[in-house]
Amino acid sequence: MTAAPSIPAGLTPLPTPQQVVTSQPVGRPDPFAPLPATTGSTVAAVPVVPQGFRFNGVIRSGYQAQALVQFGGDSGSLRVGDVGGRSTRLLPPGWAVGGIDVARGQLILRASGQAVRLSLDPPG
Image 1: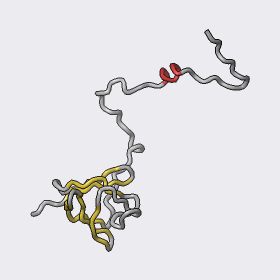
Image 2 (image 1 turned 90 degrees about the vertical axis):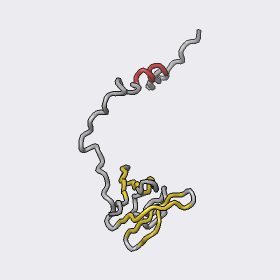
Image 3 (image 1 turned 30 degrees about the vertical axis):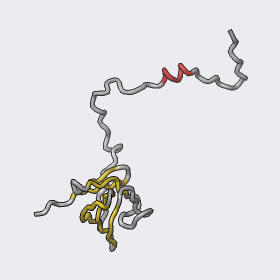
Image 4 (image 1 turned 180 degrees about the horizontal axis):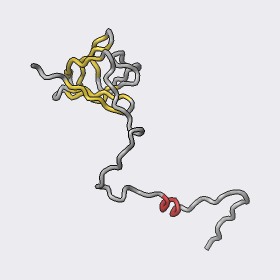
């Protein structure tokens, strides 16, 4: 049996692995219970579609979906992953394309960690 190493004066000994594991709760007591309600101050507001942005349609070119849009004086197509201010002028800075669903005619934009789903109006 080996003796525990002595700790120099003024230093605090580290907790044992078992002490670390038992001090951290894992999971929720009831994983099927509803999530706790959040207060209005902690929930981010869903961003509003940028002023002057227009979603005109979707196409599939090869295996890649594209959204046809207009923003400001520019028009063109967006792909998943495009980011305003970095890879395209068709979105304002901070906005990104999160998804394009050609079958449903939908464009999913992301801003401030929130998603905005745009749908094409049905003909009529």
